[in-house]
Image 1 (cartoon, each protein chain N blue to C red):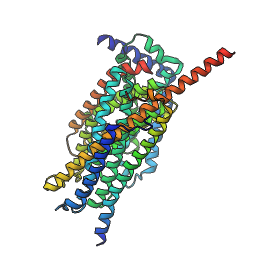
Image 2: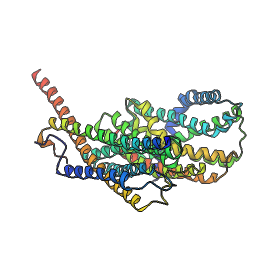
Image 3: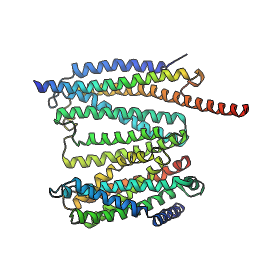
Image 4: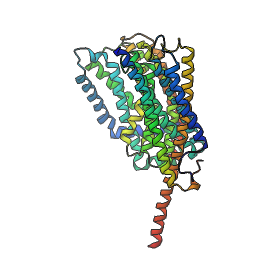
Length: 48
Length: 240
Length: 225
């Protein structure tokens, strides 16, 4: 029984860490994007 | 105007990725049965394998952008190379963490000198070095060139690292994380895996688009600062 | 092609002449190698046999550390006094300059290998067998290390963080060399079974790939640095 709980702990841990890492990175990038977009005038904002 | 790095493209991709993530969770925990050999731990595979395939996609993209930069010296290629390396490192790191947790269930230890994990660890270090070099080089031209050279050199190393570590690990006769999973994969398990790989792919592209735009904007801001500083110097000279 | 080789000989001769006059390799790197040998001896109990069992690995790890020092030195020389600019303007082929650097580094590292080998025989009580395999592996692995070092050296030269950036970049790259050379040594010393010559071939492939990469990539590097 304890072994089963352990297993689920690692399984959910793996999914959880992945979700937090990717989600956290995405949020950080989106926020940085907003901050930078405010500084750059519209004509220079085109990506290419 | 548009005060973010979003666009129609990213909104569509983002929506697809979000729906996809929900679907993957449902399939990974609800639809897919536990594996005959691996038990419930197969559910980690649905997140471990997609991170490594996404990472390799991104590293190959990095190599291509690096080569393109050396050929055409385009800012686009430089920013794209940085983007793919950064997200690639994130994916490699997640591969190591999820692989380690899977190993804890399968082998009882957090680390074995398994061929795949060891190769991933080495590649992780290689590309962390790439990011470190970019961060440490101040001159933009030198930074772009050196990073491009490093990107190409690292890409050529990937197969060599693979082969040599595979060979070395086989001497230890370590069970690989996949030795047990591949042969007996059930239909719905395979579908869940493919779905998860596709969703991670879309996620990687979505992240890359935003990160690229952040990099591009960052470049513009830096150039604006330099121009402003030059203007200030010039006006000082005129005033004096 | 021939021109590149002539340029290579020029650069190799320059580097080796500088080394002969300054003797930094002799007075800094070799004592460093000796110190590492001793430190490993302290760290691993020689009675329990750990030292003897670990000899091949310790040998190559020490070579890698010495290589980092030699590469740093090799490119610090170029960074000082604007030598890089002079090289760029000299009209020498980048591939030639690169190969010259590789030759000079290889020769210096081979001296380290020999001294270290003698040290390991004396201090760790290793009796060398399979001399042919040991020698070939030594030379091929050293060429690979020098080839990688001469490519990664300019990547970190001139950086404020140069001293920490180079090991961070170079050591993971050299992991396959460490793997292969250690395995081959174990086989040569009779402590493991397997295809020692196959490992030597893998080391050869590594050296070839690094040499090819360096010859091609030095052009853009030289322009930019």
